[in-house]
Image 1: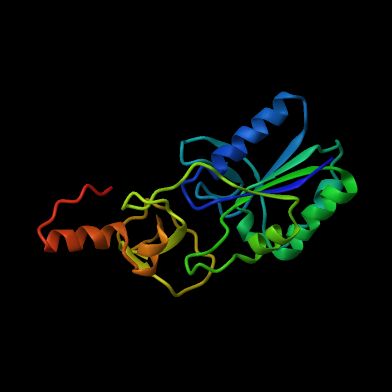
Image 2 (image 1 turned 180 degrees about the horizontal axis):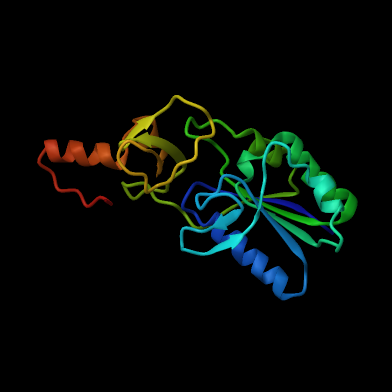
Length: 213
């Protein structure tokens, strides 16, 4: 039976890599799939992994209607790979669930659960409510302190910010003055202590910390 599966985790836990691997495995068995993404770091119409893997994808926007789009395909579709699903609307998630229930198409959605303020993305919340299975990825992202990272932080010049629009595209390699993101454990997210802040404090105290640059 077809399923709606939500693969979730923080940044850097391999969601997009798994999405690419899953598509490869199903395509290798003769199944036909469609790949969707939204606001990928590599740009429009792309699904990319931090490992350097990248494929063409169909870009999702506010007007995308998955039901109309998929049912209009001239060749039957067996599965969908939906990356960056946290950015989908609740209505779009409901369309995906309908495709599973009424057309027996498997839907594999990948996304972050909560935003930089630790609040659920609307798309992720609806996926948790409707998915047949929610799978938390087993590859753990790590905070700068070495603990398991559980929260996504938005940064500007390395300092954590807690105000702003929920959706702002950035990357972990953002330069000076740019919006970036960093994964932190709950303790350091609550303290707003990013890698940059921790390094500065260590320098002031004359400590030598082995932190990523």
